[in-house]
Structure formats: structure tokens, C-alpha cells
Image 1 (cartoon, helix red, strand yellow):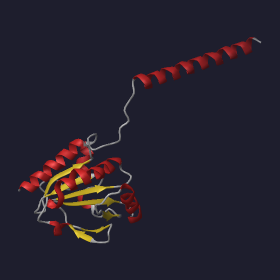
Image 2 (spheres, one colour; image 1 turned 135 degrees about the horizontal axis):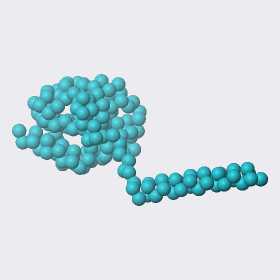
Image 3 (cartoon, one colour; image 1 turned 60 degrees about the vertical axis):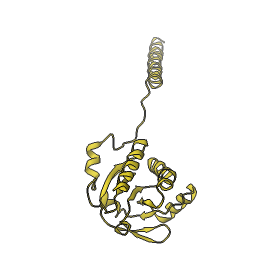
Image 4 (cartoon, one colour; image 1 turned 30 degrees about the vertical axis):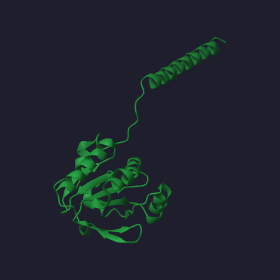
Length: 195
């Protein structure tokens, strides 16, 4: 009987300790929350630099891309006005934000003064077509299912955008999307148009 009492007391003590640890953990989570953050370019600048192949001042690597509407566009054929080149994917939340802003914040603002070339990275035509239709976008997008074009510009991280001037020189290269990036893109487009 004494042995049973001792086992019960030990079990009860273990249970109380575990309960106290759980309460302490719950209190820590409630009172000291840690914001979950995705890995972004701002958190890993060294890694970002290693993955960026094209920088401001470089001549933009030329390519021909198959567009969703069946046409083909060669980057160098767009010379004569600035180009906003964007690499994106349907699964990427910052990419979705950038595309949502693209219609009103860029296309409607600049009209035919610039060319806009959003290129889907690593996705098949069906997925991209369904996404564009679902979102109600009116702009055409390029398809880069094997990431050949993307790899001319970078090895990792999206969204990426480049503002390319009328002579084919990159005047802005950025990664990610937020209000700061949107302002930087507008400033780079304004600078390219003022040339």
C-alpha cells in the first residue's frame, strides 16, 4: 500500500509539473508573441546578392517569351520606351499583391508610355491562365515554365522586377513587393521616362 501511495504521489507531482510548464508556455505565447516571418530579401541580404544576376546599370539580357495569348515578345523589340519586367508565380503572396497593384498603380497610371512584361516563373500555361481569369486581370503575361528566362536575371527569390530604360539598360532591379518597392518602381519609371 505504501508503494502505491508513493507511485500516486510521483504521478501527481509529474502531472502538476507538466501542467505548470504548459501554463507557462501558454502565457509566454500570449504575452510575448513572436511574429512569424517568411524569409525575405531584407532578412538575407548576403544570400540575395548571390542570387541576383542583373543589377542597375547592366544591359538587360535579351530573350523571347511565349505570352499567354499565344503571341511571342522579344525584350529588345520593346526598345524605345521603358519596360517594367516582373517575375512572379501564382502561389506567391507578394507576387499576387504586385500584380493587383500593376493594373491601377502602373498600367492605368503610365498607359502606353511604358511596356509591361509580367512573366510567370516555373508554372504551366493552364495554371497561369486560370489564375489570370480568376483575378480578372486584363493584361497579358509571359510564360517561363522551365525558368530559362528567369535564370538570366536571378537564381532565387520572387517577385523580382526590373525597370529597363528605352535603350535596354536596367535602371532598377528589386526583389519582393511592398509600398517601398512600389514607390521605388514608380520613381525608376519616372526617371526612365524623363530621359
